[in-house]
Image (cartoon, rainbow, N blue to C red; front, side, top):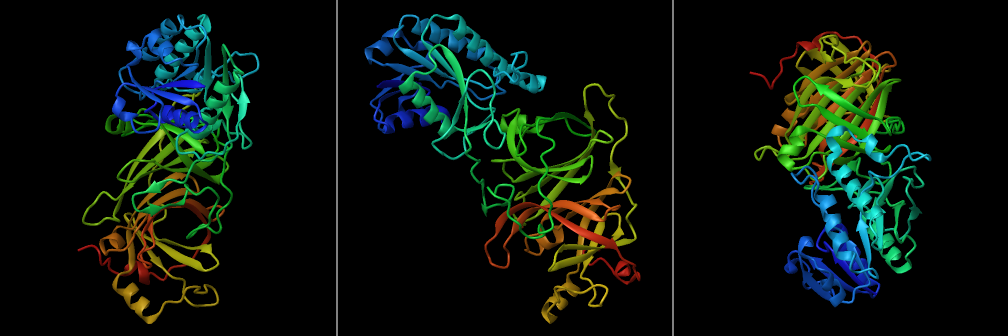
Length: 518
Protein backbone atom coordinates (compact mmCIF):
# COMPACT_ATOMS: atom_id res chain seq x y z
CA UNK A 1 0.00 0.00 0.00
CA UNK A 2 0.95 3.62 -0.49
CA UNK A 3 0.68 5.43 2.83
CA UNK A 4 1.24 9.09 3.65
CA UNK A 5 2.07 10.24 7.18
CA UNK A 6 1.37 13.87 7.96
CA UNK A 7 3.72 14.87 10.76
CA UNK A 8 6.19 12.06 10.11
CA UNK A 9 8.92 13.91 11.99
CA UNK A 10 6.96 13.93 15.26
CA UNK A 11 6.96 11.31 18.01
CA UNK A 12 3.86 9.37 16.95
CA UNK A 13 4.21 10.11 13.25
CA UNK A 14 7.80 8.85 13.02
CA UNK A 15 6.95 5.56 14.70
CA UNK A 16 3.89 5.03 12.48
CA UNK A 17 5.88 5.86 9.34
CA UNK A 18 8.69 3.50 10.31
CA UNK A 19 6.25 0.71 11.21
CA UNK A 20 4.60 0.99 7.79
CA UNK A 21 7.95 1.22 6.00
CA UNK A 22 9.31 -1.82 7.83
CA UNK A 23 6.28 -3.85 6.67
CA UNK A 24 7.11 -3.06 3.05
CA UNK A 25 4.61 -0.28 2.38
CA UNK A 26 5.55 2.74 0.27
CA UNK A 27 5.63 5.62 2.75
CA UNK A 28 5.45 9.30 1.97
CA UNK A 29 6.53 11.59 4.78
CA UNK A 30 4.51 14.82 4.73
CA UNK A 31 6.41 17.36 6.78
CA UNK A 32 6.85 21.12 7.01
CA UNK A 33 10.64 20.80 6.65
CA UNK A 34 11.89 18.14 4.26
CA UNK A 35 15.27 17.99 5.99
CA UNK A 36 13.65 16.35 9.03
CA UNK A 37 12.58 13.31 7.00
CA UNK A 38 15.27 12.95 4.37
CA UNK A 39 17.67 10.03 4.56
CA UNK A 40 15.28 7.83 6.53
CA UNK A 41 14.35 5.44 3.75
CA UNK A 42 10.90 6.83 2.88
CA UNK A 43 9.68 6.44 -0.68
CA UNK A 44 8.87 10.15 -0.93
CA UNK A 45 9.19 13.27 1.18
CA UNK A 46 6.54 15.94 0.58
CA UNK A 47 7.30 19.34 2.09
CA UNK A 48 3.91 20.80 2.95
CA UNK A 49 2.32 22.64 5.81
CA UNK A 50 -1.03 21.10 6.69
CA UNK A 51 -2.85 24.27 5.61
CA UNK A 52 -1.05 24.22 2.23
CA UNK A 53 -1.93 20.60 1.49
CA UNK A 54 -4.02 20.13 -1.67
CA UNK A 55 -6.05 17.16 -2.98
CA UNK A 56 -3.72 16.85 -5.98
CA UNK A 57 -0.75 16.36 -3.63
CA UNK A 58 -2.43 13.18 -2.39
CA UNK A 59 -3.82 11.95 -5.68
CA UNK A 60 -0.57 12.72 -7.50
CA UNK A 61 1.28 10.28 -5.27
CA UNK A 62 -1.47 7.67 -5.59
CA UNK A 63 -1.82 7.34 -1.82
CA UNK A 64 -4.27 4.79 -0.45
CA UNK A 65 -4.32 6.20 3.07
CA UNK A 66 -3.01 9.20 4.96
CA UNK A 67 -2.35 9.26 8.71
CA UNK A 68 -2.63 12.66 10.37
CA UNK A 69 -0.24 12.75 13.32
CA UNK A 70 -0.60 16.51 13.61
CA UNK A 71 0.02 17.76 17.12
CA UNK A 72 1.27 20.70 19.14
CA UNK A 73 2.57 20.99 22.71
CA UNK A 74 -0.12 21.64 25.27
CA UNK A 75 -0.25 24.95 27.16
CA UNK A 76 0.62 27.13 24.19
CA UNK A 77 -1.60 29.82 22.74
CA UNK A 78 -3.21 27.71 20.04
CA UNK A 79 -6.80 27.46 21.16
CA UNK A 80 -8.98 25.91 18.49
CA UNK A 81 -6.07 24.74 16.35
CA UNK A 82 -7.04 21.06 16.38
CA UNK A 83 -10.57 21.77 15.24
CA UNK A 84 -9.26 24.05 12.47
CA UNK A 85 -6.73 21.41 11.40
CA UNK A 86 -9.40 18.72 11.11
CA UNK A 87 -11.61 21.16 9.22
CA UNK A 88 -8.81 21.74 6.72
CA UNK A 89 -8.26 18.00 6.28
CA UNK A 90 -11.95 17.45 5.69
CA UNK A 91 -11.86 20.09 2.92
CA UNK A 92 -8.99 18.21 1.24
CA UNK A 93 -10.38 14.69 1.62
CA UNK A 94 -13.92 15.61 0.50
CA UNK A 95 -12.39 15.55 -2.97
CA UNK A 96 -10.66 12.20 -2.32
CA UNK A 97 -13.50 9.78 -1.44
CA UNK A 98 -11.38 6.67 -2.09
CA UNK A 99 -8.50 7.72 0.16
CA UNK A 100 -8.70 6.95 3.86
CA UNK A 101 -7.82 9.58 6.48
CA UNK A 102 -6.73 8.10 9.81
CA UNK A 103 -6.32 10.57 12.68
CA UNK A 104 -4.11 10.22 15.73
CA UNK A 105 -6.71 11.42 18.22
CA UNK A 106 -7.11 12.01 21.92
CA UNK A 107 -8.49 9.99 24.81
CA UNK A 108 -10.65 12.73 26.34
CA UNK A 109 -13.72 11.85 24.27
CA UNK A 110 -13.75 8.18 25.32
CA UNK A 111 -16.79 7.23 27.40
CA UNK A 112 -16.34 5.91 30.90
CA UNK A 113 -19.83 4.47 31.47
CA UNK A 114 -22.07 2.11 29.44
CA UNK A 115 -24.81 4.73 28.92
CA UNK A 116 -22.38 7.20 27.34
CA UNK A 117 -23.21 9.86 29.92
CA UNK A 118 -19.64 10.54 31.03
CA UNK A 119 -16.32 10.98 29.25
CA UNK A 120 -12.67 11.01 30.26
CA UNK A 121 -12.52 14.79 29.99
CA UNK A 122 -14.73 15.08 33.07
CA UNK A 123 -11.90 13.60 35.15
CA UNK A 124 -9.60 16.47 34.21
CA UNK A 125 -9.41 19.71 36.20
CA UNK A 126 -10.89 22.67 34.34
CA UNK A 127 -7.40 24.10 33.83
CA UNK A 128 -6.36 21.06 31.77
CA UNK A 129 -9.38 20.76 29.49
CA UNK A 130 -8.75 23.34 26.77
CA UNK A 131 -6.72 21.27 24.32
CA UNK A 132 -8.53 17.96 24.94
CA UNK A 133 -11.83 19.79 24.40
CA UNK A 134 -10.46 21.24 21.17
CA UNK A 135 -9.52 17.74 19.98
CA UNK A 136 -13.04 16.55 20.82
CA UNK A 137 -14.47 19.30 18.61
CA UNK A 138 -12.28 18.06 15.77
CA UNK A 139 -13.59 14.54 16.30
CA UNK A 140 -17.18 15.84 16.07
CA UNK A 141 -16.35 17.43 12.70
CA UNK A 142 -15.14 14.07 11.40
CA UNK A 143 -18.33 12.37 12.56
CA UNK A 144 -20.43 14.97 10.73
CA UNK A 145 -18.37 14.78 7.53
CA UNK A 146 -18.78 12.55 4.50
CA UNK A 147 -15.11 11.63 4.11
CA UNK A 148 -13.53 8.20 4.58
CA UNK A 149 -12.23 8.73 8.12
CA UNK A 150 -10.98 6.70 11.12
CA UNK A 151 -10.19 8.20 14.52
CA UNK A 152 -7.78 6.33 16.82
CA UNK A 153 -8.04 7.36 20.48
CA UNK A 154 -5.05 6.16 22.49
CA UNK A 155 -5.35 4.92 26.05
CA UNK A 156 -5.44 7.58 28.74
CA UNK A 157 -1.75 7.02 29.41
CA UNK A 158 0.00 7.37 26.06
CA UNK A 159 3.63 6.55 26.86
CA UNK A 160 6.44 7.47 24.48
CA UNK A 161 9.02 5.66 26.65
CA UNK A 162 7.04 2.40 26.82
CA UNK A 163 8.40 -0.69 25.14
CA UNK A 164 7.10 -2.44 22.02
CA UNK A 165 5.31 -5.69 22.83
CA UNK A 166 3.56 -6.31 19.51
CA UNK A 167 0.27 -7.09 21.25
CA UNK A 168 -2.70 -4.94 22.18
CA UNK A 169 -6.41 -5.06 22.99
CA UNK A 170 -8.93 -3.17 20.85
CA UNK A 171 -11.91 -1.18 22.04
CA UNK A 172 -14.47 1.15 20.53
CA UNK A 173 -15.98 4.29 22.05
CA UNK A 174 -15.38 3.24 25.65
CA UNK A 175 -12.23 3.50 27.72
CA UNK A 176 -10.75 0.07 28.32
CA UNK A 177 -7.94 -1.19 30.56
CA UNK A 178 -5.20 -3.77 30.26
CA UNK A 179 -4.48 -6.83 32.41
CA UNK A 180 -3.26 -4.66 35.29
CA UNK A 181 -6.40 -2.49 35.13
CA UNK A 182 -4.58 0.45 33.56
CA UNK A 183 -5.60 2.56 30.58
CA UNK A 184 -2.17 2.42 29.00
CA UNK A 185 -0.49 2.02 25.62
CA UNK A 186 3.03 2.69 24.44
CA UNK A 187 3.65 4.76 21.33
CA UNK A 188 5.31 1.71 19.74
CA UNK A 189 2.27 -0.53 20.24
CA UNK A 190 -0.01 2.32 19.13
CA UNK A 191 1.95 2.49 15.85
CA UNK A 192 1.47 -1.25 15.34
CA UNK A 193 -2.27 -0.94 15.92
CA UNK A 194 -2.50 2.01 13.53
CA UNK A 195 -0.77 0.19 10.66
CA UNK A 196 -2.87 -2.91 11.34
CA UNK A 197 -5.96 -0.73 10.94
CA UNK A 198 -4.65 0.67 7.65
CA UNK A 199 -4.13 -2.85 6.36
CA UNK A 200 -7.40 -4.35 7.65
CA UNK A 201 -9.87 -1.42 7.56
CA UNK A 202 -11.86 -2.65 10.55
CA UNK A 203 -12.99 0.83 11.65
CA UNK A 204 -14.00 2.78 8.55
CA UNK A 205 -15.94 5.90 9.56
CA UNK A 206 -15.58 4.80 13.16
CA UNK A 207 -13.48 5.56 16.20
CA UNK A 208 -11.50 2.91 18.07
CA UNK A 209 -9.07 2.70 20.95
CA UNK A 210 -6.46 0.23 22.19
CA UNK A 211 -4.45 -0.67 25.27
CA UNK A 212 -1.30 -2.73 25.70
CA UNK A 213 0.42 -4.42 28.61
CA UNK A 214 3.79 -2.88 27.98
CA UNK A 215 5.26 -1.13 30.98
CA UNK A 216 7.11 2.20 31.11
CA UNK A 217 10.76 1.83 30.29
CA UNK A 218 13.16 2.49 33.17
CA UNK A 219 14.19 6.14 33.29
CA UNK A 220 17.78 7.15 32.80
CA UNK A 221 19.32 9.82 35.00
CA UNK A 222 22.24 12.07 34.27
CA UNK A 223 24.40 9.91 36.53
CA UNK A 224 23.34 6.34 35.79
CA UNK A 225 20.43 4.04 36.44
CA UNK A 226 17.93 4.50 39.22
CA UNK A 227 17.04 2.48 42.27
CA UNK A 228 13.42 2.56 43.25
CA UNK A 229 10.51 4.01 41.36
CA UNK A 230 11.94 3.45 37.89
CA UNK A 231 12.52 -0.29 38.31
CA UNK A 232 10.08 -2.47 36.42
CA UNK A 233 9.79 -4.88 39.34
CA UNK A 234 9.97 -4.21 43.10
CA UNK A 235 13.56 -4.20 44.19
CA UNK A 236 14.61 -3.94 47.82
CA UNK A 237 17.53 -1.57 48.26
CA UNK A 238 19.19 0.07 51.21
CA UNK A 239 16.68 0.32 54.03
CA UNK A 240 13.64 -1.11 52.21
CA UNK A 241 13.62 -4.74 53.42
CA UNK A 242 10.76 -4.15 55.88
CA UNK A 243 8.75 -2.12 53.42
CA UNK A 244 5.13 -3.19 53.00
CA UNK A 245 3.60 -3.60 49.50
CA UNK A 246 2.93 -0.34 47.71
CA UNK A 247 -0.52 1.17 48.15
CA UNK A 248 -2.88 1.83 45.21
CA UNK A 249 -5.93 3.25 46.96
CA UNK A 250 -5.57 6.73 45.48
CA UNK A 251 -5.96 5.46 41.89
CA UNK A 252 -8.80 7.29 40.16
CA UNK A 253 -8.82 10.20 42.64
CA UNK A 254 -7.80 13.78 41.99
CA UNK A 255 -7.09 16.70 44.30
CA UNK A 256 -6.57 20.41 44.16
CA UNK A 257 -3.86 21.35 46.67
CA UNK A 258 -4.34 24.86 48.05
CA UNK A 259 -0.94 25.81 49.42
CA UNK A 260 0.25 28.53 51.78
CA UNK A 261 3.29 29.65 49.80
CA UNK A 262 3.18 28.13 46.34
CA UNK A 263 0.66 28.31 43.54
CA UNK A 264 -2.11 25.75 43.78
CA UNK A 265 -1.17 22.26 42.58
CA UNK A 266 -3.38 19.70 40.88
CA UNK A 267 -2.74 15.98 41.09
CA UNK A 268 -4.72 13.19 39.47
CA UNK A 269 -3.86 9.58 40.23
CA UNK A 270 -4.59 8.04 36.85
CA UNK A 271 -3.61 4.51 37.95
CA UNK A 272 -1.86 2.82 40.83
CA UNK A 273 1.46 3.74 39.22
CA UNK A 274 0.95 6.95 37.25
CA UNK A 275 -0.26 10.41 38.16
CA UNK A 276 -0.73 13.73 36.40
CA UNK A 277 0.75 16.77 38.06
CA UNK A 278 0.45 20.46 37.33
CA UNK A 279 2.20 23.35 38.99
CA UNK A 280 2.85 26.90 37.89
CA UNK A 281 6.63 26.53 38.10
CA UNK A 282 6.68 23.66 35.60
CA UNK A 283 4.54 25.65 33.20
CA UNK A 284 6.70 28.76 33.30
CA UNK A 285 10.11 27.06 33.35
CA UNK A 286 9.51 23.97 31.24
CA UNK A 287 6.57 24.97 29.04
CA UNK A 288 4.12 22.34 30.27
CA UNK A 289 0.99 22.65 32.33
CA UNK A 290 0.51 18.95 33.14
CA UNK A 291 3.15 16.28 33.41
CA UNK A 292 2.61 12.55 33.71
CA UNK A 293 4.82 10.88 36.29
CA UNK A 294 5.39 7.46 37.82
CA UNK A 295 4.85 7.38 41.57
CA UNK A 296 4.99 5.12 44.58
CA UNK A 297 2.65 5.30 47.55
CA UNK A 298 2.80 3.94 51.08
CA UNK A 299 0.47 4.39 54.06
CA UNK A 300 1.42 5.68 57.50
CA UNK A 301 -2.01 4.97 58.97
CA UNK A 302 -5.55 4.34 57.71
CA UNK A 303 -6.00 7.81 56.15
CA UNK A 304 -2.48 9.17 55.73
CA UNK A 305 -0.65 8.55 52.44
CA UNK A 306 3.01 9.04 51.55
CA UNK A 307 3.29 9.76 47.81
CA UNK A 308 6.72 9.96 46.16
CA UNK A 309 7.70 10.79 42.57
CA UNK A 310 10.55 12.31 40.61
CA UNK A 311 9.91 14.79 37.81
CA UNK A 312 11.10 12.92 34.74
CA UNK A 313 13.43 14.74 32.32
CA UNK A 314 13.75 17.76 34.66
CA UNK A 315 17.22 19.01 35.50
CA UNK A 316 18.49 19.46 38.11
CA UNK A 317 16.93 16.29 39.47
CA UNK A 318 13.78 17.20 41.38
CA UNK A 319 11.74 15.00 43.69
CA UNK A 320 8.24 15.69 45.02
CA UNK A 321 6.81 14.06 48.13
CA UNK A 322 3.26 14.59 49.35
CA UNK A 323 1.84 13.63 52.73
CA UNK A 324 -1.87 13.43 51.97
CA UNK A 325 -3.94 13.47 55.15
CA UNK A 326 -7.52 12.56 54.21
CA UNK A 327 -8.69 12.61 57.82
CA UNK A 328 -8.06 16.35 58.17
CA UNK A 329 -8.05 17.10 54.39
CA UNK A 330 -4.54 18.55 54.67
CA UNK A 331 -1.31 18.11 52.71
CA UNK A 332 2.39 18.64 53.31
CA UNK A 333 4.53 19.26 50.22
CA UNK A 334 8.28 18.58 50.04
CA UNK A 335 10.40 19.46 46.99
CA UNK A 336 13.98 18.13 47.06
CA UNK A 337 16.60 19.08 44.48
CA UNK A 338 20.07 17.68 43.83
CA UNK A 339 22.82 18.17 41.21
CA UNK A 340 22.29 21.94 41.39
CA UNK A 341 25.64 22.92 42.95
CA UNK A 342 28.83 22.62 40.87
CA UNK A 343 31.11 22.73 43.91
CA UNK A 344 29.15 20.07 45.80
CA UNK A 345 27.50 17.91 43.12
CA UNK A 346 25.74 15.64 45.64
CA UNK A 347 24.37 18.46 47.78
CA UNK A 348 20.60 18.39 48.27
CA UNK A 349 18.16 21.05 49.40
CA UNK A 350 14.56 20.61 50.46
CA UNK A 351 11.67 23.08 50.39
CA UNK A 352 8.47 22.71 52.42
CA UNK A 353 4.95 24.01 52.09
CA UNK A 354 1.69 23.25 53.86
CA UNK A 355 -1.79 23.28 52.40
CA UNK A 356 -5.29 21.88 52.31
CA UNK A 357 -7.19 19.57 49.99
CA UNK A 358 -9.95 21.40 48.14
CA UNK A 359 -12.46 18.54 47.91
CA UNK A 360 -15.88 19.29 46.35
CA UNK A 361 -18.66 19.19 48.92
CA UNK A 362 -16.41 19.96 51.87
CA UNK A 363 -15.33 23.34 53.29
CA UNK A 364 -11.67 24.22 52.85
CA UNK A 365 -9.89 23.58 56.18
CA UNK A 366 -8.23 26.52 57.92
CA UNK A 367 -5.78 24.39 59.90
CA UNK A 368 -2.45 23.16 58.52
CA UNK A 369 0.28 20.69 59.31
CA UNK A 370 3.26 22.54 60.78
CA UNK A 371 6.65 22.52 62.44
CA UNK A 372 6.86 21.11 65.95
CA UNK A 373 9.19 20.55 68.90
CA UNK A 374 7.20 17.57 70.25
CA UNK A 375 10.05 15.14 69.58
CA UNK A 376 12.93 17.22 70.92
CA UNK A 377 14.69 15.41 73.75
CA UNK A 378 13.60 11.94 72.61
CA UNK A 379 15.45 8.99 71.08
CA UNK A 380 14.09 6.20 68.89
CA UNK A 381 15.89 2.96 68.02
CA UNK A 382 14.91 2.13 64.43
CA UNK A 383 15.38 -1.26 62.73
CA UNK A 384 15.43 -1.13 58.90
CA UNK A 385 16.80 -4.60 58.17
CA UNK A 386 18.15 -7.45 60.29
CA UNK A 387 21.60 -5.99 59.59
CA UNK A 388 20.87 -2.29 59.89
CA UNK A 389 19.81 -0.51 63.07
CA UNK A 390 20.36 3.07 64.19
CA UNK A 391 19.26 5.34 67.00
CA UNK A 392 17.90 8.76 66.02
CA UNK A 393 18.60 11.40 68.63
CA UNK A 394 16.18 14.32 68.32
CA UNK A 395 18.16 16.81 70.38
CA UNK A 396 17.67 20.11 68.53
CA UNK A 397 14.74 21.69 66.60
CA UNK A 398 16.98 22.03 63.54
CA UNK A 399 19.27 18.98 63.71
CA UNK A 400 19.20 15.23 64.26
CA UNK A 401 22.02 13.00 65.47
CA UNK A 402 22.54 9.36 64.65
CA UNK A 403 24.33 6.74 66.69
CA UNK A 404 24.68 2.97 66.55
CA UNK A 405 23.01 0.90 69.27
CA UNK A 406 25.41 0.00 72.10
CA UNK A 407 26.71 -3.55 72.12
CA UNK A 408 24.55 -4.79 75.00
CA UNK A 409 21.95 -7.57 75.27
CA UNK A 410 19.22 -4.94 75.06
CA UNK A 411 20.54 -3.32 71.90
CA UNK A 412 22.78 -5.59 69.88
CA UNK A 413 25.10 -3.75 67.55
CA UNK A 414 24.56 -5.50 64.24
CA UNK A 415 27.14 -3.43 62.40
CA UNK A 416 30.21 -3.12 64.65
CA UNK A 417 32.62 -0.39 63.66
CA UNK A 418 36.24 -0.98 62.80
CA UNK A 419 38.77 1.19 64.71
CA UNK A 420 39.15 3.38 61.61
CA UNK A 421 35.39 3.77 61.26
CA UNK A 422 35.05 4.58 64.95
CA UNK A 423 37.72 7.27 64.65
CA UNK A 424 36.03 8.74 61.56
CA UNK A 425 32.63 8.64 63.30
CA UNK A 426 34.07 10.51 66.30
CA UNK A 427 35.67 13.11 64.04
CA UNK A 428 32.62 13.56 61.80
CA UNK A 429 29.54 12.52 63.81
CA UNK A 430 26.19 12.13 62.08
CA UNK A 431 24.68 15.56 62.69
CA UNK A 432 22.47 16.77 59.84
CA UNK A 433 19.94 19.58 59.28
CA UNK A 434 16.45 18.32 60.11
CA UNK A 435 12.89 19.65 59.98
CA UNK A 436 10.24 18.28 62.36
CA UNK A 437 6.63 18.45 61.17
CA UNK A 438 3.50 17.35 63.02
CA UNK A 439 0.86 15.79 60.79
CA UNK A 440 -1.55 14.91 63.61
CA UNK A 441 -1.50 13.21 67.00
CA UNK A 442 1.05 10.41 66.84
CA UNK A 443 2.00 11.04 63.19
CA UNK A 444 5.15 13.07 62.44
CA UNK A 445 7.23 13.80 59.34
CA UNK A 446 10.97 14.24 59.81
CA UNK A 447 13.10 15.55 56.95
CA UNK A 448 16.83 15.02 57.28
CA UNK A 449 19.14 16.32 54.54
CA UNK A 450 22.69 14.95 54.65
CA UNK A 451 24.31 18.23 53.66
CA UNK A 452 27.38 17.85 55.87
CA UNK A 453 28.13 14.47 54.32
CA UNK A 454 27.82 16.03 50.86
CA UNK A 455 30.26 18.83 51.70
CA UNK A 456 32.79 16.18 52.74
CA UNK A 457 32.54 14.70 49.23
CA UNK A 458 30.25 11.82 50.18
CA UNK A 459 26.89 11.08 48.57
CA UNK A 460 24.54 12.46 51.19
CA UNK A 461 20.82 12.03 50.55
CA UNK A 462 17.51 13.59 51.45
CA UNK A 463 15.73 11.30 53.90
CA UNK A 464 12.05 11.60 54.81
CA UNK A 465 10.54 9.62 57.68
CA UNK A 466 6.74 9.59 58.12
CA UNK A 467 6.39 8.07 61.58
CA UNK A 468 3.40 6.51 63.31
CA UNK A 469 4.52 6.67 66.94
CA UNK A 470 1.45 4.83 68.17
CA UNK A 471 2.46 1.73 66.24
CA UNK A 472 6.20 2.62 66.25
CA UNK A 473 6.46 2.20 62.52
CA UNK A 474 7.61 4.51 59.74
CA UNK A 475 7.57 4.79 55.96
CA UNK A 476 9.90 7.08 54.09
CA UNK A 477 12.11 7.66 51.12
CA UNK A 478 15.76 8.19 50.23
CA UNK A 479 16.44 10.57 47.34
CA UNK A 480 19.89 11.38 46.04
CA UNK A 481 22.80 9.10 45.18
CA UNK A 482 24.40 5.81 46.06
CA UNK A 483 27.59 3.95 45.28
CA UNK A 484 30.29 6.23 46.66
CA UNK A 485 32.50 3.44 48.04
CA UNK A 486 32.52 1.57 44.74
CA UNK A 487 33.28 4.74 42.83
CA UNK A 488 30.12 4.20 40.79
CA UNK A 489 27.72 6.92 41.81
CA UNK A 490 24.14 6.37 40.68
CA UNK A 491 20.85 8.10 41.21
CA UNK A 492 18.78 6.74 44.10
CA UNK A 493 15.10 7.15 44.87
CA UNK A 494 13.25 4.45 46.79
CA UNK A 495 10.75 3.95 49.60
CA UNK A 496 11.75 2.28 52.85
CA UNK A 497 10.23 1.32 56.19
CA UNK A 498 11.31 0.52 59.75
CA UNK A 499 10.09 -0.55 63.16
CA UNK A 500 11.23 1.23 66.29
CA UNK A 501 10.98 1.86 70.00
CA UNK A 502 11.65 4.76 72.31
CA UNK A 503 14.87 4.33 74.30
CA UNK A 504 16.06 6.17 77.42
CA UNK A 505 18.70 8.87 77.23
CA UNK A 506 21.59 9.56 79.57
CA UNK A 507 22.06 12.99 78.02
CA UNK A 508 25.65 12.36 76.94
CA UNK A 509 25.09 12.34 73.16
CA UNK A 510 22.70 15.28 73.40
CA UNK A 511 25.30 17.37 75.25
CA UNK A 512 28.05 16.93 72.67
CA UNK A 513 29.00 19.92 70.54
CA UNK A 514 27.78 20.09 66.98
CA UNK A 515 31.10 20.16 65.09
CA UNK A 516 29.45 21.59 61.97
CA UNK A 517 28.27 24.78 63.69
CA UNK A 518 30.70 27.51 64.76
